[in-house]
Amino acid sequence: MNTKIKAGIIGATGMVGQMFIKLLENHPWFDVTYLAASASSAGKTYSQAVQGRWHVSSEVPSYVRDLMVEDASNVEKAIGKCSFVFCAVSLGKDEVKALETLYASRGFAVVSANSAYRLTPDVPMLIPEINYEHVNIIPVQQKNNGWDKGFIAVKPNCSIQSYMIPLHALMAKGYKIKQMTLVTLQGLSGAGYPGPSAFDLIDNIVPLIKGEEEKSEIEPQKIFGSIKDGQIVNDTSILMSAHCTRVPVIDGHTVCVNVQFEGKKPSESEIIDCWKNYRSVPRELGLPSAPENTIIYKEEADRPQPRKDRDNGNGMAITVGRLRPCNVFDYRFVGLSHNTNRGAAGGAILMAELLVSKGFIKA
Ligand code: NAP
Image (tube, rainbow, N blue to C red):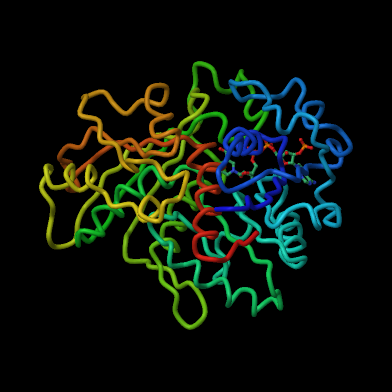
């Protein structure tokens, strides 16, 4: 790419926003030129705005330290500064919709980590390895809204790639999944900052993350769905049942999966072979954030583990392990991915790269 594309980050001061800042330093395609957050951060330099609440292990990168943070509701400030925006804000559903619609209506591509538009039939919810073809709904969305350039594309919930990509690898080989159960063990950073109190989390497990089980069961239906008559129609053929829990881990969402196939059933070695040789479309397209190996299968009996495996593939790989027969269904396994990286900022950057390669985001 000869000219880098100018990118904005809305919610730049938050948990996910900080990960965007880290991952976009020296990005080969994107230059961060616009930062926005709530009115309380507006008017401060980025380093002032995150003082005392910078959670990334390295220092605030020099490229953003002196960049002014704008009030996200003042879209005029973004005009002329960037071609598209990433968006990750802690607001109610209606407020997120209003904010993202505002930017799309003013000609920005909005690449969102928020959940507000995930189930809207003309909004693609992308895991680039799986449903990259859903980008083709964008012209329909633009027509429905009367937008010539702007549009909204969203990424799914922060834990679902931990099981969706391993399942997709098997489905792509012709194995049909009948039903599955999953238990998530979700890290603390998934709740944003400051999240649950230390008193609630230390020496404890909280067996409820409000709304998360519904997302874990419904969002896969849209991702496995297809475009029909100008909308994305869900594939409801897989029966899913989820338990979602919050655990005292800083980063990393682990998922224990039990799965039953319909008809032809793979052997254990066929499953491992399929995961190890998974063909990744983002990798084939040369997207810079696509890891060399999207799925990493760990042979050790006690892996994956969040502390040891969440940064595999620069935090973009899905690590799986503990594949074994199930006494109730066919097999069980454990999947893990980094929630603020692959599950949020990294996943959104991969989406933006896909949208560039398909011609939807331009300089
Ligand atoms: P967070 O740490 O609480 O950060 C929230 C961000 O939203 C801050 O930058 C905050 O700005 C900004 N904000 C608050 N009110 C605003 C307003 N009125 N206008 C503009 N910006 C406003 O939350 P987070 O964990 O980063 O999550 C952000 C979004 O990403 C949520 O929708 C969440 O569901 C989603 N998500 C999170 C994860 C994860 O692992 N954490 C994963 C996937 C998706 P100030 O600093 O100025 O208040």
